[in-house]
Image (cartoon, rainbow, N blue to C red; front, side, top):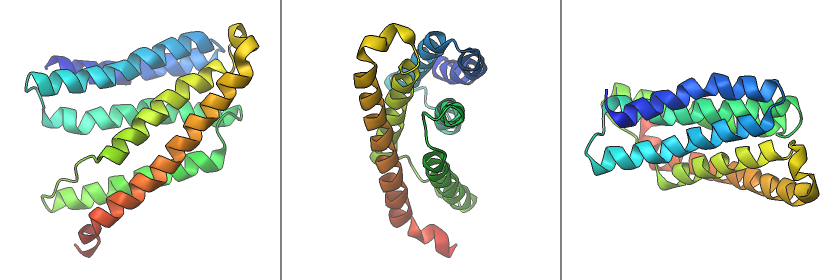
Length: 179
């Protein structure tokens, strides 16, 4: 197994530690775990492309690892009101719809590649989550208002990009619906 795939697996392994830290109220530790895990996403892609280590495993598991990490965070944050439940439902509905389209396309030998808008969506989500984590860290109380505004701005931006990228995937790949 190559290094990029090991980093992807590491990101998945980090999720239970992130969840446990968050649920025990150790938001700063959860923040650090999330940041390190998010950085492995950027790193594994760069290494895979630079050294021609792109694999089918990586093509499938890398975006799945991102989703497991980000959506586990959003699910936890619905519980304490940091993320509205309806927002998570919209985000998950897009993921299931696009995932379904990709499955149908793959059954016909067609690969639906990740588009730039989907990548931007993921980056916005990976910025929103750590900012939301800082909202509950007492150390940041003096600047809590600014962190909260910034976190909510990125959360809303990620929602808008989620909807936009979902529409874009559907329009660009509408032939999948006639299979």
